[in-house]
Image (cartoon, rainbow, N blue to C red; front, side, top):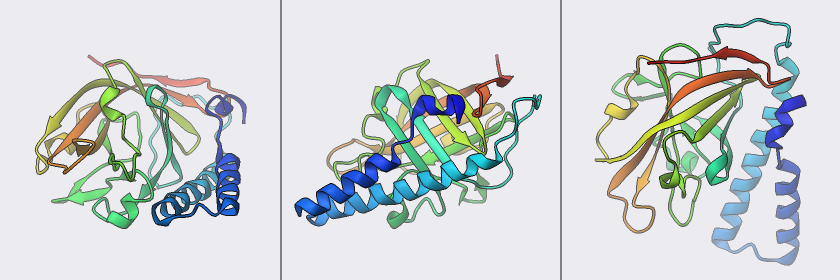
Length: 223
């Protein structure tokens, strides 16, 4: 898979851990739930790996990358050790949110979060942050310039953090369309106790790579 191995998939390690823990009999209620989440993530990773059979060749000279259909999506945030598969569905479905980050899609008052693209648009993803489900637990550590990466449909979309802020839970302006390719991550605030607000991290697209060999197919610069 070439340069794609830079962020090495660990599905087999996850599965091995599940089997070991099961053998040790430590599947308490919450532990069992978390292992089921790990296994669900493992299955999504396998689907992600299988999707690489359709990766475009390095001889293609794309200057515009637009993904129109859902395929397995991977979110990587190196600074805070996030490497998770993103789910598609109802972002308000708690059962879905318990399995991993969720792409907003059609979510609120007919607003729509697009898929990754070199075109203007705001890709929005939500995830839990509390003690039980810690997908975005360290999101508050991100600073301007830190990388957030989405891998999908054979491409690696690299975003750089622009800002983070805390907002009221009913403030949807951060999910609205943007006039440049953006990535917005949302989670609960504070990370412990009762969630009263939301933490938002916004990034801008800076580069798109072909995962097969990491040749840059589009270097995006704005403003």
